[in-house]
Image (cartoon, rainbow, N blue to C red; front, side, top):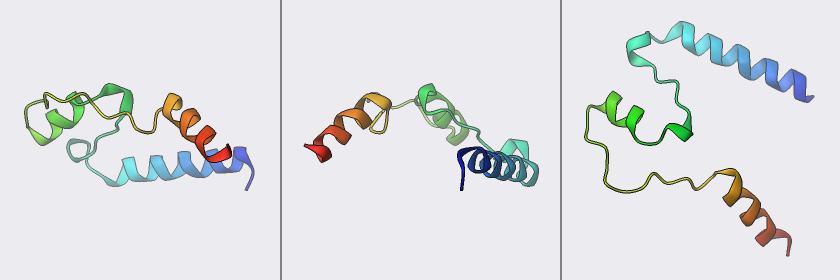
Amino acid sequence: MGTKNFQSVILRHSEHVQNLIPTNKLLIYDIAEGWKPLADIFEIDIPALPFPHVNDTKSYGRDRNLHTE
């Protein structure tokens, strides 16, 4: 599957999900937003811990280098 086709499939799937799920039950979440959207939707306090960014670009590059050395 080519990149453009893959992107098209992902976009169609995302639109399909957004049409199926009521707005008040759906969270479109950007991991860069941290705890707040999650805490809001689950009606909990924001944890005092830093948000874990274990799959960010920096850690991905670092981890990839570990596997290729």
